[in-house]
Length: 107
Image (cartoon, rainbow, N blue to C red; front, top):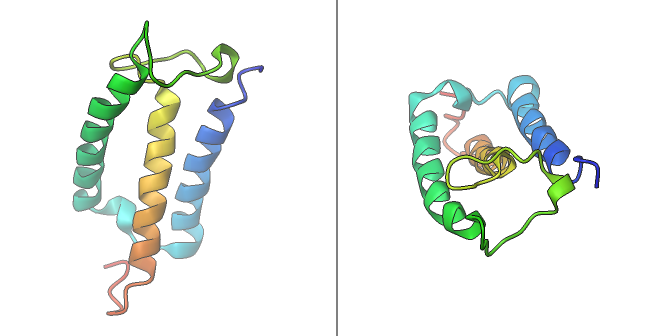
């Protein structure tokens, strides 16, 4: 691998989700303090779980050395995991907001 295996899709997933919100869905989710509080909670649990799964020198989950940037923080968590986590949770919340039957999406 040449560093593209996990890093580029992680970056693209964030770009796609943010672009969908900005230019198509327009729910206003990313401007809400409650969203960012939700993300802090999600990342808190992600650190606890992912930190155990990826902790070196004996990780439960391994990554091809050329497939990630090698940047790990905290507890040896590859930064790409946070990018994918952001994209996954945000996409789910955007879909939820978009389909709200009460017509309050984006408020």
